[in-house]
Image: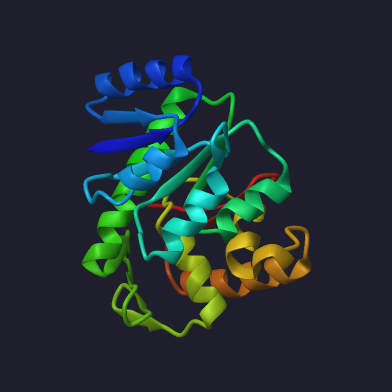
Length: 222
């Protein structure tokens, strides 16, 4: 696995390089946004770790330009900016995940590996969790062979949870993915959507897959 880190803190970059190496992950680092624009074009990256506040510009701009160019390499924003507005903007511009500094190294590695696995699943056209199968091309969902009739929003929500299986996905992340900059994480609309999706995914099956993590968000169980 190869990871590109765009980060101006050289001490942090070196610590991550050593830590990732111990995990069998090769990390290449640049602090320059212009260099990063060239590097992101390479197909070998499993994940790109991207700081927002760079001396040569904004990581948000790079993320936006990558998606506009059709580059689908997973992007994890790694920044000290923890405002909800920043999280929403990052996700709306196409980032796949958002981690604030300081962070736990083990969690960062888990998120990087998770993003890499999800990218591989998308390339295969299917995401499988337990007895749940999501065809991301045809947008058909089955559980134990039974077809589930989902609305567009329900499908997007389920795919988001399935591609982060086992992880807690916050209300802010879900709202940003579903409604963009107009998202209101506290809206009752999200609760209604979760209730409908849970009824379709879990009702009639012995083992529930959708779980609420009180005060944090939701996750899909493997």
